[in-house]
Length: 105
Image (cartoon, rainbow, N blue to C red; front, side, top):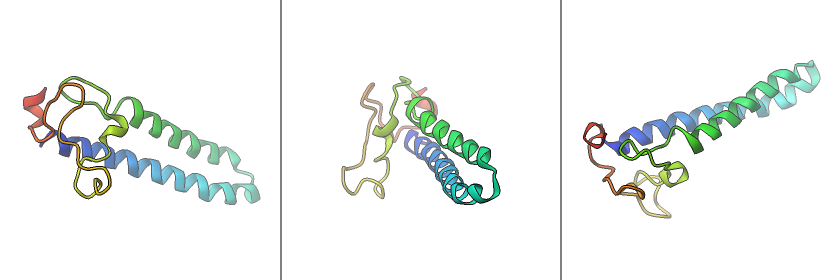
């Protein structure tokens, strides 16, 4: 598994979790006012906020230098890089994202 594949998989998991939490929050915001379960809406909001904080702080780091890639990590693949271009190396240590993850550690 390359560093690019590893980071893209982690980003997909975070994006899916954040979207599900946001969707749950939005759906319950309308439903909870009628059925008096507003605490559940707060739980989904906390889950969404925690996911965003994880993405920006802890989960998206270079495996070699542990540099925080955060939002720099967005253009990892051709599909997501149509506007800005694909990122090919870590901006902190210069390791190629196409190296195997084990070799970079």
